[in-house]
Image 1: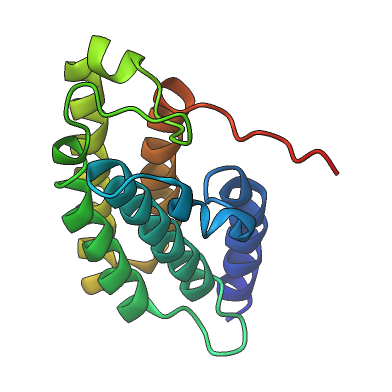
Image 2 (image 1 turned 180 degrees about the vertical axis):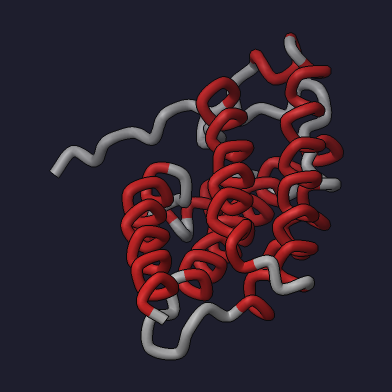
Length: 166
């Protein structure tokens, strides 16, 4: 019991240190209103949903009072895997907009961009499978790997968020 509590404390500290840089903040949830209808808005909404699913995974992983909820982790990771399959189709060549954070380098390095989407799909599937089979000791590493797939793509293919001028 004591080692489980220590493990959960370690997982909590690691996730709280790692996830905020990967999961989008709540303050830009309605930026999609500035985006044109079609693939640009659709991909923004997909990524926003993935961010919420990642937050749900984090909450389920760190459920101190109720314990870890592997059912939520499995379900949300499966949803991320499913939506990851759609990512390339939401970036047709030339789909840019001044309000989009997608960088034009996406289309210059298309094979790499597609690979990032495949990596996210694979990592999310792996996390979902581990949660479904009760491999709790592997979940932390698999969550970090999945979040790392998001971060790797965002670091290369997404403009940094503009700082508010307040």
